[in-house]
Amino acid sequence: MPPNSAVCGLRRAELRTADPAATAGFYRKLLDWTVLRSEEGFECWVGERKCATLRTNRSRRTPQWQLVFAGATTDGDLSGPEDTCASMVRGRAQHGPWAPPPRKGEPCWVELRTAQAESADSFWSESLIWTVRTDSPRTSYTVGERAVAARSGPRGAAESTGWLCYFVVGALDEAAERVTELGGSVLERAPHDVLGESIVIADSDGVVSALVGETARWGG
Image 1 (cartoon, rainbow, N blue to C red):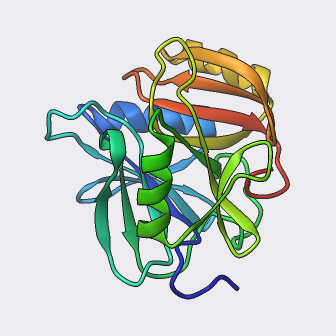
Image 2: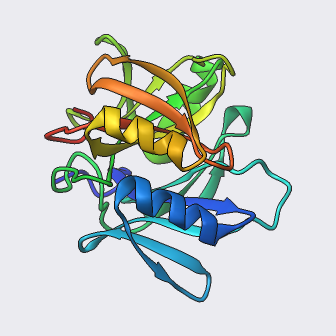
């Protein structure tokens, strides 16, 4: 079991867009989610585990996935370097190194892309009680000996920063075709150092996430 004070995985991912119904349709067809309407928007499930919530964007912020980390001693919102945001909640993580293996449609890894490595390491490790490990091919944020997330530099044509959430899709080539059929785009395709072949996509609203084939555990 993870230490009680440390944030040890994800509860869910959250996304606010101008048209949550259209967004729900995109991801339902791409990731085979069960999508249920709620008073606040839409709840997205794989089996008995909630993966995501979709809400109406009432701010001027550019839509992007916001991660909700679990295992904290209190609930709260965090805003780190480069205006990278996340939330933390008490209770058990649904997705992470101590959760059951990720299934198709579920988050399987998260990665922080930042141009301010030292500031990001300091903020996120102190806020979420993580250890920063740099003795591997990647910099990892760990709890005990298990990696919860990784940190890398900006990548791709847009040189984007922020949290990148990876989802399992099974057949990667078929998923890439489906992304374009649904009005999204494939931004980058490259082997991941741990997860294997992966693609970075933008949905029909330009919101960025990543897809991988089958993986036996969190983080590959």
